[in-house]
Image 1 (tube, rainbow, N blue to C red):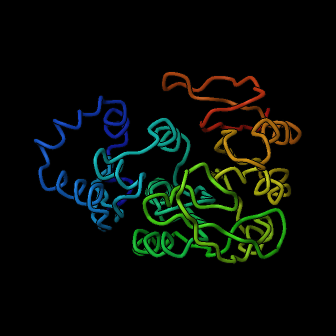
Image 2 (image 1 turned 90 degrees about the vertical axis):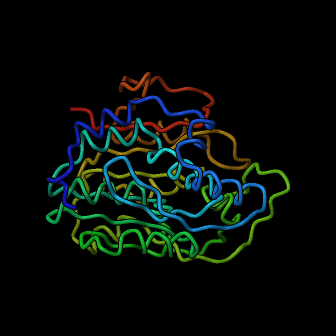
Length: 286
């Protein structure tokens, strides 16, 4: 399926539609409900196919929290999904830092087409394996097994297992008694990789569990030369991590203006002292 075969207006309507209740979901999809139950109550790890809003299928792994949402609804972070659809077009370059299992990378691949380029960073081996499966037929995608960082180094990475794989990162997350497996990953300055590939990013998505500021410090040249749209997750819940307000200040110092989603619409954002979990959009001031 190519982007030109997808009715993106119809996809946008479906993203705004009301999701069915859990009871309705179980009645409509009893086999999927069984998969949920096995994963939730028996701890059974199950790789299944999620039917996405635009018609693709994505391999997901239950009981991962993102996988559960995609398996049930076929969509995730609908404001961000709609924004990508509105901003990305044929020939664009999309950089996905913290690609996880590839939902946004696959969406971007469809939107930018064969003339575009996707660069996906995912340092966790277990999620990167599924990411490769999901992007294996997309000739416009390159997957980086390293982490994007402010400089080239070797870092200790924490893997919380499939149930909490969305929280994997460099910091201790607030997950109670959940134990993490530590291992070393190679980290590289994202500017160096982008320049080595002779890329001109139009859009950079960053979701790296409280390490966004460190990633952005490795993107200074890209921000100055190419002025891409940047999305970054914020949320002040991780002990010892930089405050999210520091990310906003950093981007403002490069001439970027922050925006946020309010009731599905993008509006200007006023910097806060403390942040709940959210995604901010940064656009270069004209």
